Image (cartoon, rainbow over the protein chains, first blue to last red):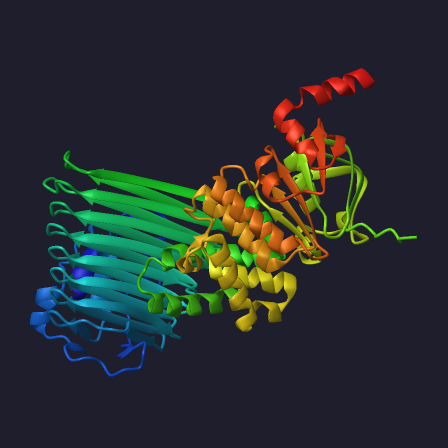
Length: 367
Length: 257
């Protein structure tokens, strides 16, 4: 595994994925040939409503055949260094399995609690066909550097809301490599509330006909946070649909980057894709970059669009709230919360939304 | 001898400009508690500017004059302080706030203006329920985002719902009737009546048309031309304006000069 990483350790700094946060800066020691010792985090599952875990849902150590079946070949093009590095470090591989046709009535919490200096996890996601579930993965703990690789598939005709909340407080590298089988409907959410330095590379493959994906991001940066998210959606199947909506509220002296890549491969007829990045600059010293890109190799598509919008808080909205008795601080915080809430409310059901809101509000109050 | 009631709102010689262009050129107006006044005028006469200046919009600069609400100097206050002092503006074009749910917004707004106690408990819930029923708003409305994707009529009804819950001392309705159908106007008028009539509050209705004034009977009508109130009268003035337009008033003014 380490040799596979070392083949990719020297990254192309001009490549989009490394332009805003280099691999050297992302690497835990900054010495790119270094493959340091790593802890494993504690990973547990529970239901938001406190009920027992239903039959057909489990988390356990993965076997070699699981890895072969669900582990993607990690072809992240120029970005391969990151997932291959985590693969080289992890002491063990874990699998979250939800068997075919299982319906979970309450959001499932997957808690990843990190500790020590360097902590890494490779989590295989095996969602069976016709599953209906909401999954909230919480990455938390006090490890100085955390690396999380999530790989796997959402089964045919599954309906899944899969939200990852990043509340580590320290440095985070997260890579997702997930594929959607035929007619799978997935909402993939990311909530970042307190990572000081996060490099996130989320990739979804819509390989089979009829699959549908919505990627939502609700990112709050403050202090001197450096957050860099790359979201890539690859349409290879026919009649596939994807939307990306990424909201970043940027405060303090933070530096926030969002890069998006929508690829529509030749043969993905009837594909319909769109991406939108919104940056709300809540401090004069905050910086935000958004770079949406398209690569369309098929002419018979329904649509493929991209856009970005950046700006400070809207003066007219502030005035409207002030006429309703909100003082300046109340109006500002209400608008920031509203901005982050818009994609949040699209991540899943009301219980899931309520749970997320509680988390976000805590962090909003802190800044 | 009957003692003269102190005015709820007193505007004296108000002049205001935006981007160094003077819009208001000396407005004088008094509203007594329980009174409903209407300001009518053509586009560009300064009607909406009057509303925004009263509410304290930061884009407008007051260059001269005074505004007092129950004797308190409004010009010394920020917009949120005016709201808390009892001024309410129903916007002509209310702003949308995607991500902020109506229910949450209403509770926070009532809490900021009338105090925390007023925004919780059965009394608030009953008032909200009754207001929504009166305005024909469905319960699902509460989980929508503020003015986001609302129809023109829904926006106006939502403004009136806020007014009913906030219970202002002075309600300023900036063309609340425009874009509404007859049923909508009647509903809004009932909302205004229930919030203002029989209380010590007052209202200033800014409108182009006579129609809303047929439902909310105003005590006084004022005609605004080029930033000045040039004529005031009883409710019959609105009918006259509807029939004859504004030319005759302008002619009167020229004749008097």
